[in-house]
Image 1 (spheres, rainbow, N blue to C red):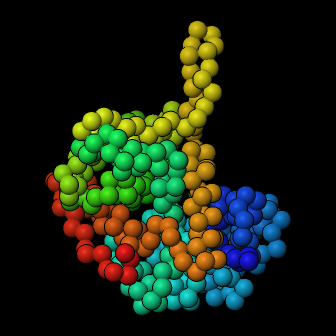
Image 2 (image 1 turned 180 degrees about the vertical axis):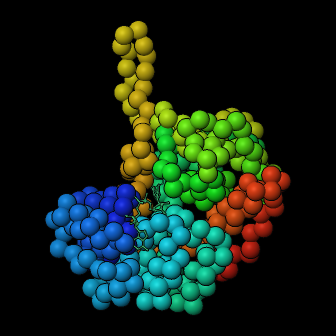
Image 3 (image 1 turned 120 degrees about the horizontal axis):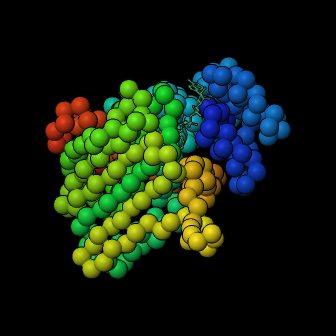
Length: 336
Ligand code: NAI
Ligand code: ISE
């Protein structure tokens, strides 16, 4: 069985996902593409040698009868519109994070999905598929380090474009921690605070960088996340869970340990594409398999919304410089 897939947004990750579906994964085929920048869509078709329709709009792609499932990999603020349209067309949809740039946008998606009476949405939160995070989760769930008490995280990018501004540190970057920490700790956030340290000279005027986000969970776990998106030296994701009986750290990505010229060194990756390459493969294969089995199992629209509820509170905390409450709504049975 082959799932015919249409891609809306053929930029960095859209192209990457199209490549993995065409060359690495099994059971999926790219049959349609769309991008506001049509030449970008054309280049992808040429590069991969696809026989795919290039649509003039995302909505035309969604309503193409030859498309079974849709990948939404356009910019964050466009996600809600395309995901709701795909649901209303009765099609499975994989949406890159964030599901929407506000919790209200996610609520609109949830309403549409519940009306369709079927789980149709998978959100592109890939960290729960990463082998390192799975090891951390196993350490926590098996009781190896006792109950988690404190978590220290860092989310560092070498640099970001000029279009990236202060709230994006939350809804575009921290959103990964807002998802993976709920899953890792099996817990919900109750409050958030954002602290701005001295600003790096590499950040432009509309971006406060770095930022420190302080979160508290229902069970009382305290979390600090350093978000530093112009750190220059690499793409570096850290997570250290302090438990009652030990500390579990996210493993470093594998790299050659080199002794040379009086130095002992490991390489640090520079790009998210390489850091989570295996996790992206597994999450998208799970999406394709889920469609084939008519049952999605990956991060749901509810997970997308839960992260966005916390994200909204963090953006508010950036502005207010106060501790902001995070109030998670009751999870409907539909998402259990
Ligand atoms: P990008 O800027 O490289 O690509 C986005 C593409 O979407 C562009 O080609 C743009 O022309 C197109 N686009 C924008 N609005 C559109 C519309 N209305 N209709 C059709 N096409 C439209 O951005 P990138 O880095 O690929 O990010 C895309 C999404 O993927 C974002 O939501 C981002 O947060 C997410 N992302 C997720 C990652 C992960 O680790 N899971 C990594 C990188 C991005
Ligand atoms: C990007 O969109 C991603 O999702 C990356 O994983 C993250 O590290 C980066 O900060 C985002 O801009």
